[in-house]
Image (tube, rainbow, N blue to C red; front, side):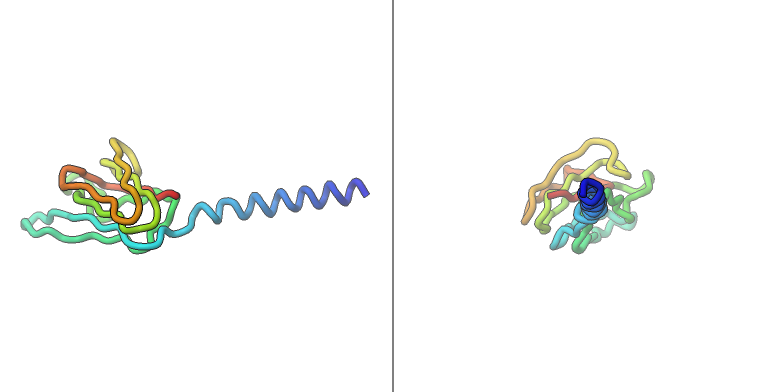
Amino acid sequence: MRLRHTVAAALGALALAVALPASSAQAATGSFTYLIDAQDGAVHVGTLADPPSGICMTLPEVAQDWVAPAHTPRNDTGDFVTAFTGPGCDGDSFTLRPDGGHATDRLKLRSVLFFH
């Protein structure tokens, strides 16, 4: 009887351990937009639609140091987002609230991390 409880507890712990990582990679519902200054002087809008939560995302358009960073972010997702000045969620950071949190062109960013 004791062995049966031990096995059941171990299987329950294993099921919980397997389920936890999957819950942290849920998507933030909505969109996150930012502006990118092109070399020809044009301004482009970058968008992340339903971005994953809990995963650092380097913005592909501004990943390289020789490209000007993105700016003027707007968070229309249901999650908080931290914007970082460097790729790989490195450098200075600033957090935007969900559902309309935004910043001016003074906030420069190269990567973001969404979280609940």
